[in-house]
Length: 198
Image 1 (cartoon, rainbow, N blue to C red):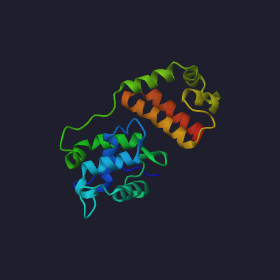
Image 2: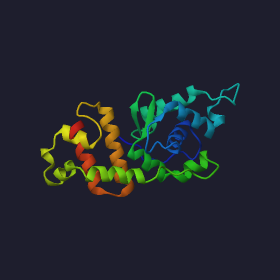
Image 3: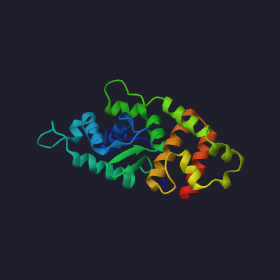
Image 4: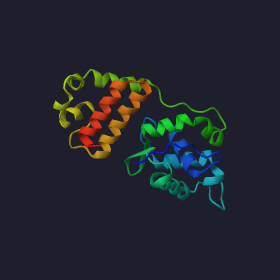
């Protein structure tokens, strides 16, 4: 799947505002309910996402249509879908927002740009992984690791759904990205290939 790398539009549009709203709600580091995102979109762009006859009321259908467009074509690869009713930014999505933060803030935020979550949780993830016997086995002989062993360090089970595995792997990739830890990123990529075959 191709992942969007082109910049956001210089002019406001509903797809960009959805991705920006998700980022402002902490979607780099947590699953966010789509209804919470819809309300944030309306808060940021009420003229675009309100009722035609009652612009003071949010029109969830407009935000929902923006989400469908994002996932189908316009912002490919930038969102994860951990659950039917929640979304989270992929590592590529976080990078895209942070690369174009100035444009997005100019188009949609009049106040100070809100920062993403603290790095503390990323450091906690790194410490949990690197203190586990699985990490030492990965460094020594990764091919001997089983999905059961990998699940234990990824806080899931070998029988977890692909969506759960993708969420855990994305959390690990996000921590790797924030902390600039290439070894941790290699581990995340190893888990993705070993468990999901991707």
